Length: 118
Image 1 (cartoon, rainbow, N blue to C red):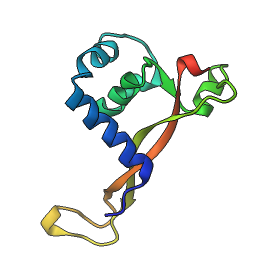
Image 2 (tube, helix red, strand yellow; image 1 turned 30 degrees about the vertical axis):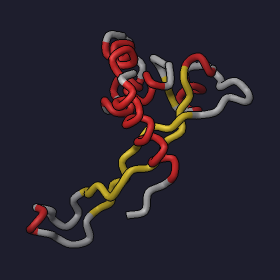
Image 3 (cartoon, helix red, strand yellow; image 1 turned 45 degrees about the vertical axis):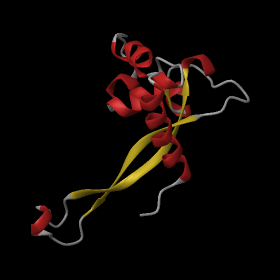
Image 4 (cartoon, rainbow, N blue to C red; image 1 turned 180 degrees about the vertical axis):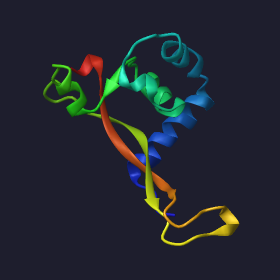
């Protein structure tokens, strides 16, 4: 399976954090913070990535624009993982998939910026 370099980088960051024991502090920031930020609806993995990068709120470029904030010039995005879904072209009874069902085929890297980068 072909893996995009940014996706590989994100997964490596998560594994490295587990191995180094840096997770508890980062996760406390993520799960003990209450806000209506869009990133609070993200998967646990993506929220973990955000916390490991030192942010409690992160959004895409256009999401920041929609709330009246601009990403500062020269800031570099970090990436979260987004699912790549396609419609099944034919049924696969072994995997319980019907024609037209959405099927996960992999992940893509989505660039986001933290609050402090705006």
